[in-house]
Amino acid sequence: MTASGKKATGPSVSTRPVTMQDIARAAGVSQSTVSRVLNDTPTSVPIAAETRERVQEVARSLGYRPNPLARGLRGARTMLLGVIVREITDPFFSMAVEALSTEALARGYNVVLGSAHSKADEAIALRAVLETRHCDAIVLLGDMRDEPKFLEDLRASQTPVIALWHGTDLDGVPTVNTDNRAGVVASLDHLTQLGHSRVAFISGRPLGDIRERRTAFLEYFEARKAPVRAEYIREASNDPAGGAAALRSLMELEQPPTAVVCTTDHLATGVLHAAAEIGVAVPGGLSVVGFDDIPLAEFTVPALTTVHMPVNEMTAVAARLAMDEVEADTDGGVHNFVLPPSLVVRKSTGPVPPG
Image 1 (cartoon, helix red, strand yellow):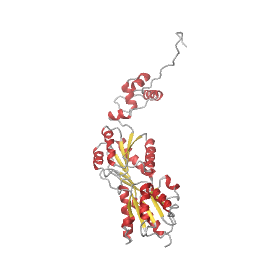
Image 2 (cartoon, one colour):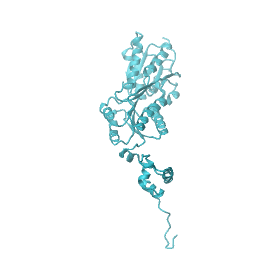
Image 3 (cartoon, one colour):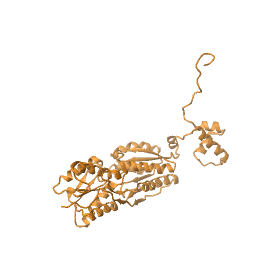
């Protein structure tokens, strides 16, 4: 209690962010010197090493955090990597975002995430962010080619853009992809060696990677003079419900398939669920192959045979392309990187059933 009888209170704690002016005052230097040190700005008169160290130490002790948006408006690097995801609900893309974030953080960048909710036009809302250069570079996860105006705006911007899982052909934009054809061929070689000839194909919308996988599937059988029956090709929403519905319709055919290749593990989990519900044994009555090798694939019942996507390696290449272009402040040109996948054989595939 104070002499006046009022309850004493401690010193007020300011919640306002620390500014460069605060640092300048504490370090005994000008605000412009603080700005040049913290932004690593070239100067005509060199700043003494002792002054740099003092400014940096004061900034750390005061808990200074740079405002990336303010930096962007001044034309400086924001150290923000924008990531636009086509299908955030697909576990594969969640895995990819995590890998990309890890790679970005290792280079001192943070990730700003935007989801297109499976509709490319919903990604247009991020255009304002690009126009004010809040992000140093943009990485696209999943094919956005059905929204040409969005891609046109990206190409016209001064922001480096890298595309992952768009397929191997995207005019004017560097891409990082896996060899979809090799992955599908490995799946079909595996099923053929097990004796399967009635093989169905379940895919999401035929964009980018998915289109390449579908083309590889059809060409595989055409090359062997055994074209696939039209009713064995099913397009579904890229989720477990879509995979389940597609399998139920396939198993109602007069001559149902003995094996199913899915363009994603997301679809394949629905296929496994539907097979269990309608009493089709996997792999005794039906073999199932996915694509992506998401963490869940190892724990489905039975464990899913799938094509392993080298996600960590792909995101590392994409992040390096984006950040190198930013830091070099040059146009790195258009490069298309294709990394090899591998087939992981688990318990969901087996010999063709008798009869």
